[in-house]
Length: 162
Image: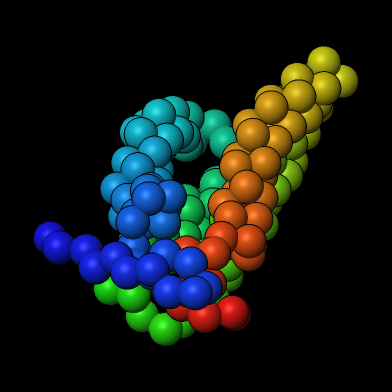
């Protein structure tokens, strides 16, 4: 796999460095993290499926389907970056916004499901803490990627200002 790099007066051009790492993350590491997450969540949900309220089951099913969709979108964005498609950065920015939205929605699902299954104040407090602890690092990571896409000279020279 050969990458072209040239330097223009705007900066280096081509998919190398951090841009290559981003494409690799989108195509390989994000899908792996999804699979690891699902291997933990889905068996736990299926083992207690008959005891879980229908609303909770529907919420978590929607969450899994949404996460699968975002994972496919991630792969598509990574391939678009690697192939230097003109709309790759716009797609990747849309992916980031979608992933942040899904992270927040997953946290809300967690809190709502705890409210429906175990309405104690301790359980709700623990669910809120767990949701925040899970969502905040992800959101910060996505903000860093977004900032990179907006400020990188390589991204601007390779794909233009989008």
